Image (cartoon, rainbow, N blue to C red; front, side):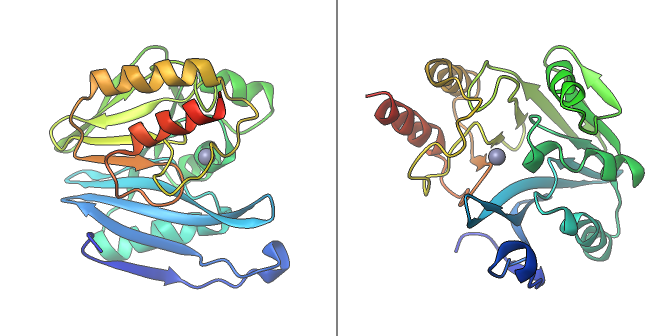
Length: 240
Ligand SMILES: [Zn+2]
């Protein structure tokens, strides 16, 4: 196992919701001040993992997306407090789905500044979902402490509004649900997907960020940098 430590913070057996036990919340070290958190929810009757990321800075924590399992919002904040003695100052959601934007209101109420694109905000508003406090129109950068993230909208794919997040210095590409894990056998939830455009979108990302050290996927294992190519393969296969 490549990462330094993996531990299960809390073991919840929510059999009444899932019909099977959920592993709760897992936090894994990525590199330096970067951590991946994984929570679980039921998708088509199967317990499915969803990944998010946080970065510990001198001025608090930046979070990309939030746990899919809403019962893990507070345990995640608690564990960040215990482990790093920091609070979350910034949270950005990478598209409008529950596994990304579901924590916006909770994080806002906990004191974080929350962000989405205007496009994601519009979708959340139209579907009567909780929205971020702040929005941005074009690609932007957000800084906290010694770290700066860069957002990039390369076009439609998994959804109309999916963006990726890039940390230039550390070459960390957070792909979210736009990028499929090398463990993924199919494209997952494609209800709002645009398969033809998705190919172009992935190629644009590959061009813009040619040598990522890490590529973080929205679901399943995230420890293969060739996840972008795997996504292209899945797309090609699905369109044959
Ligand atoms: Zn997803």
